Structure formats: structure tokens, C-alpha cells
Image (cartoon, rainbow, N blue to C red; front, side, top):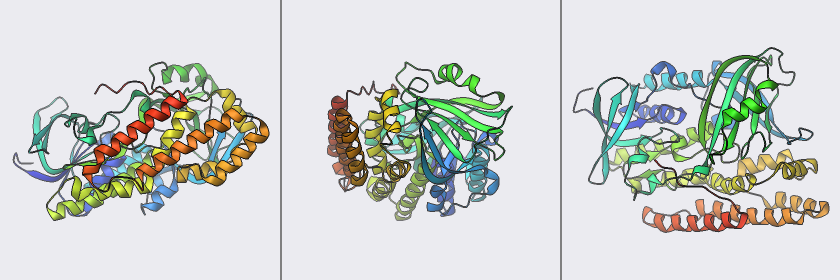
Amino acid sequence: MSKDEIYDVIVVGAGVAGLYASYQLASMGWKVALVESKPASKIGDRVCGDAIGIHHFEELSLQVPSYVIDHRYKGVKIYSPSCKYNIVVPGEGVSINRLKFGQWLLSQALSKNVELFDQHVVLDVMLKDNNVTGIKVKRVNGETHIIKAKAFIDASGYKPAIRSKLPREWPISEKPYTTDYNIAYREVLKLDEPLEEVEYAEIYINVDIAPGGYWWLFPKSSSGEIINVGLGVINTGQYNPRVQYDKYLRNKFKGKVLNSGGGIVPTRRPLPTLVWRNVAVVGDAAYTVNPVHGGGIGSSLLSSHIVSKYMNSALEAGQVNEQTMWQANFDYMNAYGGKQASLDVLRMYMQKLSNDDYEWVMENKVVDGGSIYDLGVKGDLAEKITLAISLLIKLLGRPSLLNELRTVRNYMNKMRELYTTRYPSKPEELPAWMKTIDQLLLEYTYKIGFNRGNLVKW
């Protein structure tokens, strides 16, 4: 790279979202630089549950090689706190090898001439005329220099390297609350005694073990020898996921630890806008993770696919800004973001439920696997689901739960509508829309007694 060279696009972060965005834009003929703090050989190595529904790959026509896939599932089993009851949620999924998947995506990007700056961290963002002109980066244990571009994509994860350094008046730099995150810890084990049941990914709801989250057991081999087991807890400062794991799960599974680690996952509605000025945000940096089950691989890929499409058009037009890329918001909100916003409302309510509440719901079969699948796919409490649940609750004698459910359904529908049919038609309308969202959330959290905590410090 020469000192004065200017790229078309700089992507920061070589996770799933950054790799896919880099590949997409380079495939369209643009000169792309990819900045990542890890060495190239470690790209893809991330703490994760590793599970993803195959529909995410199918929707993007992404042909993932078989060597990336460790295991296949028929669906998910969700267990009650006592483990006496379970719900089977249909839907084919896979367990992927995150390192192999990341390395494969990297090879795809490099094959399109993406220039990789591995082992580089972002120190600062350079601004001129209300646009980003470059980023100051430092090679690990090396020199500092500036890389310039016409457009930028922040794909750097839950603590965004670019977005957190932008002017606070830019809506793309919105700060989250502490409880918008879950903290997770997981281990990949080779068991001394293989599992007998390997056809389903298993989720266990127990607020003693995983307050504000759940713990999981995901088989990673057809033999049942390799598993991914871990838990996530709400980020209130009260709970340490590693401590919870050691206390409740370590003695359940005997074997050799192949990999272990912790991470932070955003579990909330998406960023108000994925684009502003000549910057776009994708993946965890844009809060594209599902708020209820914490899955984010598929939605990260989707956000990168959509943003790349409109950034390409903006670059072709020679004008990269929120006006020329605004349609990316409509496409993402209608494809996934509206569902996320609706599920964020449900997530806050679920984080207040007790083990007794969950046990009662599952013992009495208030919801079934089909309803949960519909909820996950559509993101709303469909009328037919709500009617069935309401009738059951009336018959079974929990009127307080019925009233709470009506409140949750009402706000879920309002939030989904705001993020889809009532999403701002142009950037100038965004500030007023954001105030409406804030007011609705303030009203809702007050009604259900949910404390969102403080704004993050970065």
C-alpha cells in the first residue's frame, strides 16, 4: 500500500459480517481493505454456540462447504427448569466449525483481491466535512498509520471500533444499555461417555443457572463425543457466566476441554439506522442478533448482504451517504429488524419470569413447538397463537399471566410496526422516530418493572 492510496471501502472486523461484506463488495469490483486485530490464521476463532438454521444459508444462496459443518440437527428441544417437560421446535439446523467457516470466508474474500490488514487495531477515526476520510490503525507491536477510503463498514462487534468514535449527534453512534447484552461462557468438550441423543440442539431454561438467559447443550458430532455446552446471563453486573458454569454445569459433563472462552452478545433491537454519512454498520456492531435466542450468524450475513448492495449503488453513483443508502434500512427492517424489535419487547418480559412461571407454562403446554417456531420466524405473537394461549390460561386459572401477555403482545406489535411500516421514509425523519421508540420503551419497561440499567461507558 502506498502512503496516498485510497480504497473504495474499508471494512473493520473480520468476523462473519465483515468477511462477507468484504467478499461481496470486492466481487462487485471495488477495492476493499479489511482490518482485523487477530492474525490471519485465527480469523473465525470465536466463542459461540456454533448453531445456525440452514434457512439462513439458503436465503442467501450461500454454498457452504461440507467440511465447515460439524453436525446437523432436526430442530431444538427446550427444557423446563425441572427438565420434566420439553418442547420440540422443528427446523433443520447445523453446528458449524467457526474457525473453518471464518477461514473459508476469508479465502473467498482474498480470492476477490481484498487486502487484509491483520493484527491491526483502530486507534481513531479521521473526520472532514462531516464525513469519515480515514482511520488511524496500529499494527500489534508495530507502527501506526492512516488508511483512507471513500466508504467504511463497521463490523467490529459488540464494542464497535468505528461507531463508538463517531460524533454523538450521528444516530448511528447510539449507545446501548448494559442489559442490552448477555455475557456468555462455553466449552467444547470431548466426552468420556458419548451422548445418546444427538438429533437436537438442546436449550435449558433455568434462572438459577442462567439468570436472564439459558444454558445449552449442542452436539457437535454424530458420535455424540463432541459437544458445545455453555450459558448466557443478563449483563447486570450481578452474575459471572464462568462462575455459574463452574457451579452448575462443570460436573455434569466429564471429558477433555478442547476449547473454552467467554464473550458478550448484544440481545436487543437493531441500531436505529445501519447507515449514516459514508459509514455503514453490520453484524453485532449493528445489534443484528436475535434478542431471545441469541443467534447472530445468519442475521449478520443478511445485514452484510443488504448493506453491500446499497453501498455498491452509492459508490457507482459517486455519492455515499445516508440518502443514497437509506433503502438498506427498509430492506433489513422488513427482512429481520422488525422481528428483532418485537422480540426485544418479549426478551425483557422473559428476563423477569421465574422458574415457577416457566415450569407452569411448559407443564400445561401453554405453547407448543410450532408456535415457538412461528414466533421465531415471524417475530410477533400472531393472533392465532395468542388466542390459543389466552384460552388455555383462562381455563388453567392464571389471569395475571393473561393480562401480562396482553401487554407484551400489544407492545410487541407496536414495536414491530414502528420498525417496518412506520420506519422513517427519509433520514430527516429519524430523530423524531427515535424519540417515539424511546418513549414507547420507557412506557413499556415501567409497566413490566424492567430496569434497563445504565448506558454503556464507551
